[in-house]
Image (spheres, rainbow, N blue to C red):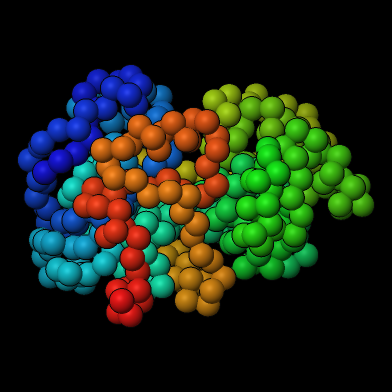
Length: 346
């Protein structure tokens, strides 16, 4: 099969399109023909050897994919060959085929294309876990979302809205702020001057919840835009800077800071027995599927590219011009773009 291979830690430009052996599922795993695989900033960290979930080279990067099951190792999985599934995995998505633990393969709602479905098992599960399970977000809360036009931010907007919160989206350009408003944000503000805008919007109180996939100076300023007894959600460090947290502000404002690592909840960072994580993972995916069916979330895809054009996708991500998700299509762009509904009506 064809795959993008990281032979040694370095730059994404060093990835090699290679012919490698198609992996075979072990007991409790399924084989998947990958029709769509999501690109992200986290991939660049993994390729550079700087991601917290470190995989030793050589390896195939990519942690989020969608496709069709080709092989089920045992009947105990509850899955069958031919099922459309979205999957999360520690690595291996940038390939024509992948293997994944059956506990991390989920039926794709009929309304979603393979490309859209790549956002469910990592991006939306992170948003749901952070906002609902860890921050207990609900009606009456004001949620400040940074990086609001990226895949992570757009997902957080939709989840926060579904939980009944008021959403303030923070993004760097007018086009990105428009994209955030289109996803359901009540207000969109500039990422440089957001502190005063948040205080003005909340009558000086500040946001109850801050969703931060950016880090760096954004995190530090957020501590001054958050309400007393607020909840900070640390999602990632897209800025490249890990903030130093001033504990005095946490004390004075009675703040709670939650680190949110979906890999921990999913059971592969660090590795946990499947039975210890499957109930929470299943419940999260069930809740998200219900939101899809109800039209409350609609994953946004920025662009779908043939797998060999991965460089164009990473260039857009590094240029911070993406609104939504960039997706690679190992078996052709047309296959990645169709949902079951579209297939049945075409």
